[in-house]
Length: 483
Ligand code: SF4
Ligand code: SF4
Image (cartoon, rainbow, N blue to C red):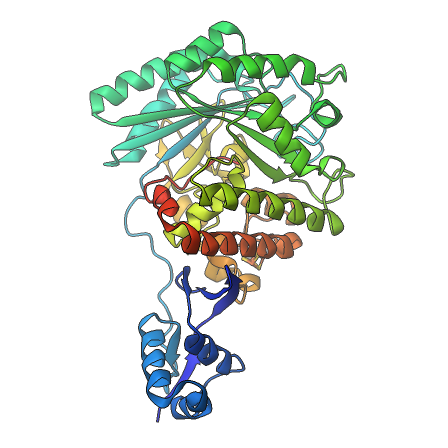
């Protein structure tokens, strides 16, 4: 007689139906009453199969329970308990170079704003961009070398993506322009599809810059924190003056003229600026952004703008409201610009079960102003987090060691967490600032991550019942994004 066990899963209810999120595979599916009862009968631990059938036969009938156990086995929601201990899994061994999909080019490490909370210039900075040895601006030569590096590292991949980043990216507009022209020419010669995006604080969006962005179909993300009283709390010039009045008209002009790619806003949330819903409304309705994404401020945890405890609960409450607004819009095939929910739903749709939280150091790298290749844009210029140089390529030994050390299997704190297929231990940069170690899990906000993942599971599940066709739009969407 076999003993059966439920595989690790998380049960949710959506649209009045029970759903099960299978942690080992990242699959989400609806269960009927019989399957739900079987999984609950096994919630305290493994039981003999016959005992489970016997316990539920009066409610559902022998045959139905046996048949459903068989189906759950096929779905790998149940397994037979092995009599022999499992053989240890082989250690992670990268078999061949992983193609680079996305390169973030930090064309400058200088900024004309002085945002107090900035991870690049504030108290938590990891690279000295004022007195350090790195050039303040990337040269045209280095940028060209970076483009060549990207195409080499992309291998046979038919597509590549360049994101221009800073500092304030547009402070190095001349090099940016030349780099776009060069990269386009090389892409044509190599027969690759190339895509560009750019992040800016919008202060330097002059008409000629906007013309260039439009002509070159460059996707733009604007860092902005909301209406004047929120934007001007932290996003100030070096003289302390708020930036809202300068950036708002420029962004409106950009949105009015740049029709070839959607324009998104990227908001940093702090303890003092946690008014998520009013920020969203202002940025979409008053300014006209197509999408708005929010991220809690990254810091060591000791700053007075750090979000903690109740702040995370408030943020989750407001995210939930916006997520359900998104759901109602999606049920009517209408656009809603809350990108946090759309991105997580996209991941759930693909059934991600991540070994790593993001593509940093693998499909995505950040290139510093001197051509050093780092884990991602947030580590650009950090010698401690260097993977190589654009002239020499990625050092495969360093990369393999990085992958070995950061694999989710090594994050023992995450081993029993149901949210790990999506979270996979959290952002390395966040972990580095909090715990001084990129291999740490971001345990300071697990409740928030699990709460938010559960909301997204529910929205996804409800959408799958009410408007399943909507989900098809996620079939071909690329996974990587720059936070
Ligand atoms: S960091 Fe926290 S929420 Fe994320 S997988 Fe690990 S335990 Fe889960
Ligand atoms: S999640 Fe963190 S480590 Fe990963 S790319 Fe984004 S900022 Fe870098």
